[in-house]
Length: 343
Image 1: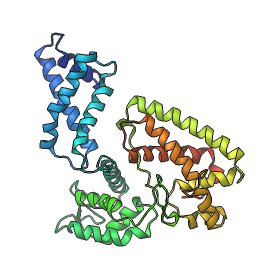
Image 2: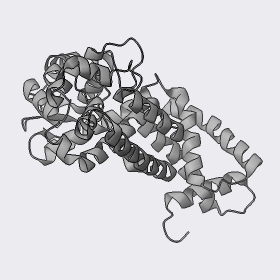
Image 3: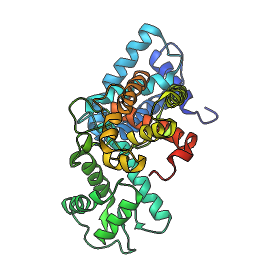
């Protein structure tokens, strides 16, 4: 068939194959079928926390029917890859163990990247199955319950469970540990044992002192569709303009308002925010509390609602993560002098 086809071309070939109105060679039909199967498999591994090949295979027929209905009604979509990806993701939702399962995979991959980074720096060793701070990877690996116990004991000492935490965790274990078990237990800890009550999305009646918004876990650009990237970019520009306008009119003053807005998107408690800003804790609670009508938290929630309306195929957790990473990143550049020293 000549040169190798890219994903856009393969996606269009899949729709042409399903449409059945054009004559395809046997090689083209085979490529379309293989491309269809691979698209589902790839999406499943990216989306599902627990990938089960048999269960994913059982969904193939449902996804196929959905695509055929689209073709019969409207013909081949103008953006075949985007439509194919969306249809597959919607089909895979039937396999979600909980509303957070689709997001767990991103966290798991993030920690896998941390392990790779630490290995590249020569701080840990692995054989792609086990990992350790020592070069000796043989011998018995500790069980998952012991791994969780180490995490449970160590995690409260860290503001964020980042690379430093992972390295210190492996130092505490001081022996080989299976990578898959390690990653699963870190994610299990994040979702099952946090002593927190207030998320970035918090509602009425929640305890401000217990606030601990979701830690931003970036979603790689290649896992976002092109139209989503455009929407996110335009949305970010609008929000940054609003922040600029608000900061000039806010009676707190520009610098203090910027600090409060940024810190509301971090894991800081009201006491810690008070230390950074020099404000009284009660005043911090008033300006950041989810219960205050014009608070930083209520404004952020409104903006997240706007982003969610644009990213209709993303879970709430994913939207919050995208919002935090985009807005916080822009603020760190635009207001560097105000936010310097805040980690």
